[in-house]
Length: 80
Image: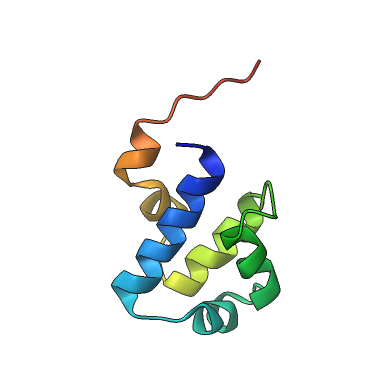
């Protein structure tokens, strides 16, 4: 699974699990709703760690909690 889709799946999962809308996430995280929608439709190729950190604040979780999911544990990083 590509890294971008893994982020989308994780955000969608957390919104469903916490029963919050994308609008509520935008409000709580101070990330504009349009930015969240661009992440979700994969038109934003790399949202950046600070954006993910703000989303985590909106979810009320840490970055470690966000990335503590099976799909991220199995991810291989190729820096070449």
